[in-house]
Length: 113
Image 1 (cartoon, one colour):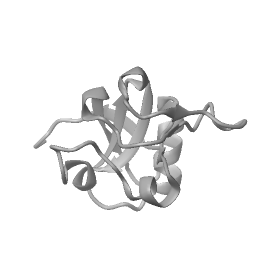
Image 2 (cartoon, one colour):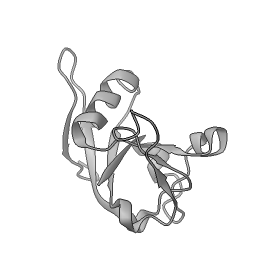
Image 3 (cartoon, helix red, strand yellow):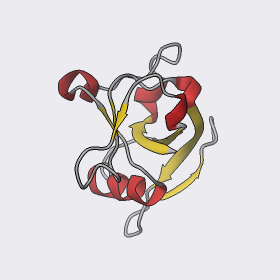
Image 4 (spheres, helix red, strand yellow):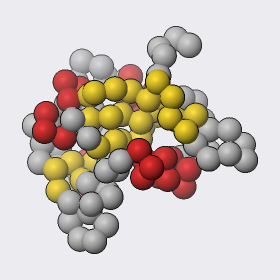
């Protein structure tokens, strides 16, 4: 399993298509995390001030049609997906719960909750 952090608004914008964030065009890959603790670390470090609902998309790496690479010493923690994220590869969507003064946690995402 790998995780990708994304704002709900971005994830929901084109539900009929594979998800392709701006980093895919700009850098040639989608940033991911290899596990929950790393995904939460990324959420705290880079997305603490992002308004609105934030998701951690849990993906079955084997179900992705795009290549996944794990380069260098940090590659094990930060895999790169070299193409869009197939929605069929999604195992689960988690809400990244952010409260002031506390580390982020994952909770099952409940649409409309």
